[in-house]
Image 1 (cartoon, rainbow, N blue to C red):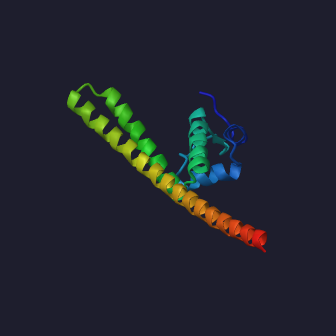
Image 2: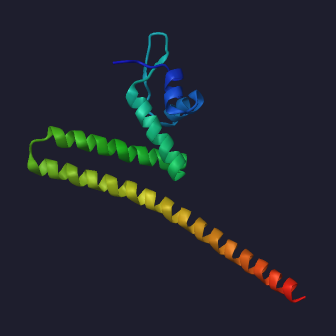
Length: 146
C-alpha cells in the first residue's frame, strides 16, 4: 500500500492541508495511520473520499453538518454492501439490500432538499427580474409618450 503525505493529498484533492486536518478533527475524514514520527500517512481512499466531500460541498452547497450526515450515509451504505457480499443467506442479503436502498433514499432526500432551496432562490430572482423589467418598460413608455 502506498502511503501519501498531506502535501500530496492536498495537491490531489484540491483542498488545503488545514481543511484536511479540520475534516479529520470533526470526523468527516477518518484519521489516517501515523508514522513513528507522527506524520500522517494517507491512502488513495482518503483522497477519493476528500474528492467526494469537496464535490458534495461545492456542487450541492452542503454545510459541514450536512456533509457529516451525507458521508455517514455513504459509510453505512459501504458497510451494508460488504455485509451483503459476505452473506450467503438470502434473507440476510435481502435485509442488507433494503438497508442500502434506505441509505440511498436518505441521500436523495438530502439532495432534493438542496434542489428545492436552489429552485426557490431561482424563482425569487426570476420574479425580481420580471418586476424590474416591467418598471423599465413602463418608464420607456412614459418617456416615449412625453
